[in-house]
Image (cartoon, rainbow, N blue to C red; front, side, top):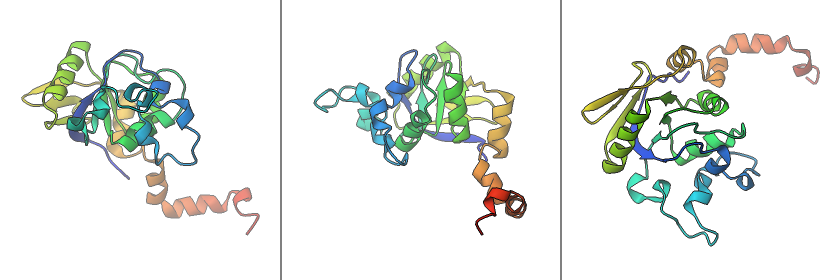
Length: 200
């Protein structure tokens, strides 16, 4: 199972309150069988105009390519419950998100995919966003175990529920990993489920 005590990577900031799931991944790009190609559509309408020409956006900025720590503001991920939103961010390269607050369903979807969503005070988020913008190559450490975010010579408090913190640290967020880790018990359980055995 994949235990997540910390996530370390370069930072990227997307500013603004109430950024909903349709802004994260427009609905017209959700007609797909797999999530594999969704990364290129993350924040698409904010990144491109009607002629597909690039707008000014952090996800288009070459200096932020390869970033994995996303820093956001209030109520990030509000709107619909679509899993495509965190999937598009993951496919772009995001592995952890620091924000002032998150929509509950969005944060839950991220948790199930192994992406910590940690909450920091508004002033601290602003400092972290400014740091990421001014120091695009600097590493940021989202430390789930210590409930801190470390960057440069600084650190800020980062909150998440004890349940989610324990799940990430233990690796129990990874349900597939849990099934594989207990393969003998999984097989034994499958044998007892009638509809899985009637066509043998």
